[in-house]
Image 1: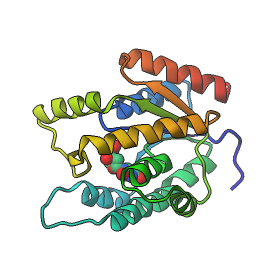
Image 2: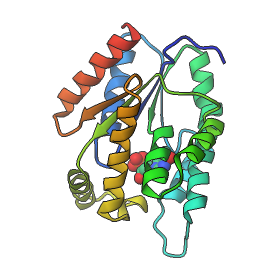
Image 3: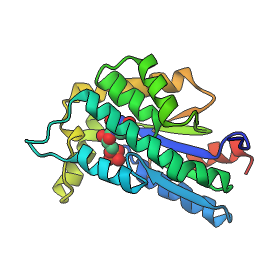
Length: 216
Ligand code: TMP
């Protein structure tokens, strides 16, 4: 697939509670206000198959056991589907695509979190993503203590806790460290954003980067 560069696929990454979804919505609104077509997806999800896999991956039923290998392949299956069914067609149709999580989540969670080797994950991502690399990725960086505090506040407000959120604090420390390392190793694509700032400040930093890199 030959697409204009940088590819108009922008992904949002970070630990739970970092505020990704809010920022995805804000960027979507800003691009739409300028008259752009925008497709927003979340991962896992974005297709019927992906949403069903998401429900399974998030479910907390004691009888439902998902070993790390099955978990890895389910995340990748959801990605393979959303890339082919939604993301590639939208990009070909001159739309922007914003994805709430993408390939870097697998490197951070299944790589540093679960311990799968990075080269293996990169090969699997290559298959799942059909070779597609985001034009820009924002990592919303938050301490794992603050992330957990935000999840606890959401739970107190009635949100259910999912399977991943029950992992111990060390798991989320490793995930955070992995994201920071990825940002260091790919400064041309990944922008690390301090997510402890206000929603407004974060949105402003994101927009500065998007408008500069994509020439808006
Ligand atoms: P979220 O949409 O609330 O961020 O939930 C998605 C969860 O799935 C989150 O705990 C991160 C996890 N995840 C992985 O472990 N690997 C992946 O490749 C993706 C996309 C998500």
